[in-house]
Length: 102
Image 1 (cartoon, one colour):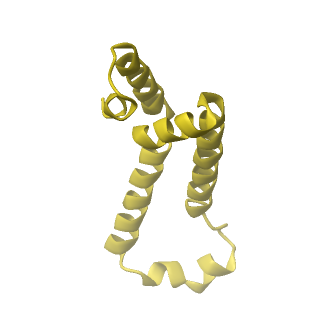
Image 2: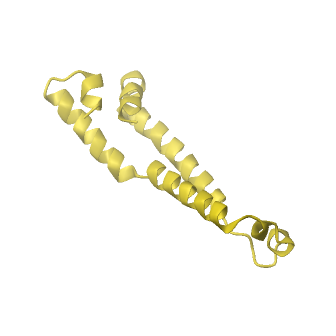
């Protein structure tokens, strides 16, 4: 991801790159929130038992994988640190691509 942010920064400027990243991250978090939405206790899905027909292991595994995906995609603090490391590499004279790999 750092090299993508660096490419966006080179192409559009750092402010636009962070705005694009913010919109993309927001949309991903919204989609993850919709995936983890629970059905109401009296809803048709809950009453029909379709959710209960799945094996418990598969449902748990799917939710764990989706949770891991949501955590990986919404880690903004990690990207802030990565952005600072990239700037540090630029200040030390490294190329944009090489500093993005820090």
